[in-house]
Amino acid sequence: MLKLTVLGSGGIFPDPQRGGPAYLISGQDHHLLLDAGPGALRSLIKTGVSPDDLDGVCITHQHTDHTSELLLLLDLERCRIRKKPLWFAGTSIIDELFDFHRDWGREQPYELPFVLKRLLLPGTGNIGPFAIEGVRVPHTKNSIGLRISIDDHTVVYPGDCGPGKEVIELARDADLLILECTMPSGSPSPTHLTPEDAADIALQSGAKQVVLSHFPPTADVAGAVTICRKVGVEVAAAQDGAEYVV
Ligand SMILES: [Zn+2]
Ligand SMILES: [Zn+2]
Image 1 (cartoon, rainbow, N blue to C red):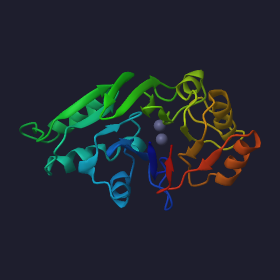
Image 2: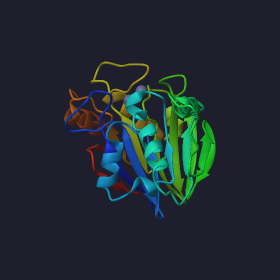
Image 3: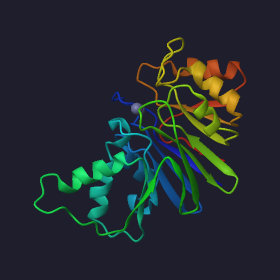
């Protein structure tokens, strides 16, 4: 079993209804944070999961709406007694951020009181019971889409992305597919998805269930859901706190 909890269903624009991009994946008493946007830690503790319970954090790309609470989590865990290693999965750009933080305004770079482990993406690896695959997707030159499985249960989160066959292949036959839906209907972009793009990816990939997310405050959320349902996609619009089990 895999459980997705939406921690933040918004994008870069501050929104009273939605936190920045962040998702919690749970299975077999282990937990992964996917992206760490504004409000991620506050939303996390509302679910009853402590930051100390996290096995790892997967970062899709460096945009601040996806990373703004990453260093906050690192600082928080430096001040606590963590009983297990903390994994960070993503491209090497995360190491640049950590190196910067370790030196920033300090006479001596700090030492972490826990083991920090790295899973470099793109590539594959395991964090706890989770099998993780990361592939490049069209957004920034460092953007990674994630495919996460336990046994034969699979959740796919491409992060921010434009339409592309990499995204369709990543999402192939997924039980649950989290798709961004940043652009309004009829306004295609190479780096973000419209509702029509999301519907096309869902249909071509064979994903069983789709959750639309990363909505700007101006989004026509109901209209996006209607566009996807019209072509037969089983779809829901993400809300902060919503849970999905596959
Ligand atoms: Zn974003
Ligand atoms: Zn982005």
